[in-house]
Image 1 (tube, rainbow, N blue to C red):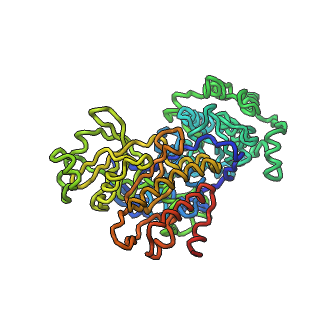
Image 2 (tube, rainbow, N blue to C red):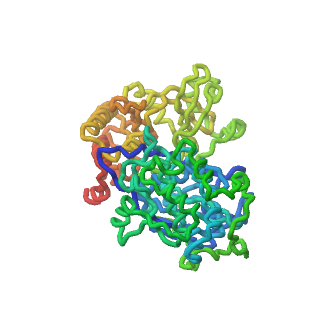
Image 3 (cartoon, rainbow, N blue to C red):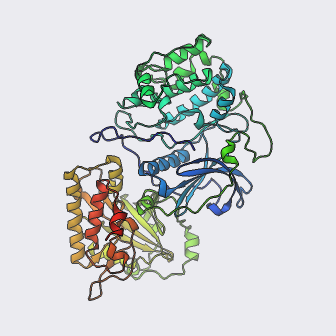
Length: 595
């Protein structure tokens, strides 16, 4: 896996065009069952980076048994926050996109220490490998690859996605020789009101000037990179490449392009129209978008409808052999023994950033009734008597978040058409009694999530609460990077008041963290904060006030919890760690070890 240079902060006062935080749900190939690592046989290593590997694998069970896939394995513990966000973005884009020239995601799942993306295995390797062997391509070859690439980019742009990392290594060839665009870790789906993104990311030689100068970039930046790729394929060299990164960036911003005269007039014309430093003047940036590029004389011989249907024969077809042959992959990797180690367990923060990757399946009504091995909760019987079917009163909508023992979904109350959230708890994995009792007693506090209803079908408990449309404090932290002292103070003041109230009632939350603190609406008003998820909460009953069941998220737990000598003051420590998180201070494990 090639690793491009990382994103760099532009300006602490400039909010990067809103990063879309994605709750990564378990993804399953249509018509197939849920997958896990045990269902795949490792055959070869296809690539490797600092935080993971790509394997050639064979499915050994299920209806697609014996099918070959590429398995991208990422180690949670070595992924920085920005890499975690990128991985979430990559997975989300791949699920959303369905295009003949974009790689397809078949499965996504996780273990404690790793993330797994199961993708198409593309036997032809990447375009970089072919280019390095042939030095340069003919114009006819380049025309074919660029035409398919233009359709792929246009499809992404139509979905509001800027690709941002176009280079030969990210363009793969299938067994027939058609391209497949891959590696969406740097793609940007959510941009600001001017449809610009501001991250400094990608591989520097392929960056557009507006990316280099950090003034904000649009989808037009991809068409500059498209021109760099065209130039490289036609000449075997990059158009702007200095002795170091700084010189390369200066050349991108200022240097005059030396146009090789052996290129056809049509090729030279297209390159000049793509290498416009003002993105508004660049071909493809106009109101007609990709149609401007498709109409250019360089592509005059392309039948775009046939191309989309894959009816035009590629200029190069990878050599055929056994299905698992890897002629077109680097032998430095393919010669290695394929081994997927368990992986170091990640921090609790990593678990939160990848919450929802795995899915707790909810059975149908018939299955639920057949599996009623657990009695109906007494509180639910008091509330609903004999009418205990959640779906009688509510219509279930999309997932909001997924945990190890529950799933949270948006729902609509049928009688009033009002929106709510429902937490569906698997009773075989956790007893929700304490959580329900706490919400019934204290949910009317202005900064504690309000309980609206409870249902129990025997296997699952359905806890209906108000819908938090403003999202999590964690999302706000990731979007803003840093809070001002004033805003952090207001947030912590609200949390402190609420914790004080809970302590006065003899309630300890025990899992206070940014992902359990939500905003009612999108205003971001600290007074609209609600503390949620009382799944680990306890009502103190012993005379000495001590809790005896250690239950917590590791990064946010106080030392006295770890040594089983903890009482109500643990949440004060948790708030201190929350402040450290907001300030982006990552010294928690040092504090734990030295407490």
